[in-house]
Length: 168
Image (spheres, rainbow, N blue to C red):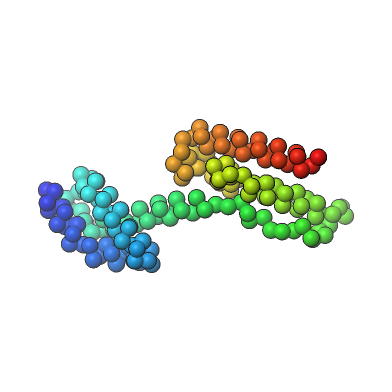
């Protein structure tokens, strides 16, 4: 299939693409953005299309993959550490009769200290504490792996200094 035929075929399924994009995003503007991203990706990768394959199915699969990748990127960048509940006022006693509220107070101090970090340090650290691997953080934030490791190191060092100052 030549380039002109490929473009005509792509234009012929624009309505199907918009319907699918609206189904995925539930938002007209986001659907239009997704359609544009998909069209660009399909045109850039037309050499990967096999002539006898289902063209519409191929294009809609590309669209679905772009949507999923964008969704994961958004979720990973919105990770926040401020999910520790406020247990400060509770008098929790463990099986040995020891009061546990002081431990929760320390957790709140830690959470506050993390939230006071600048975003360059807080976001990679929060993602790491949430279980993301260094490589996943680097890919999600679109920064080099070494930068991720450095930022997490500096965030830990800053937290250590902050928490030591609080205990004195």
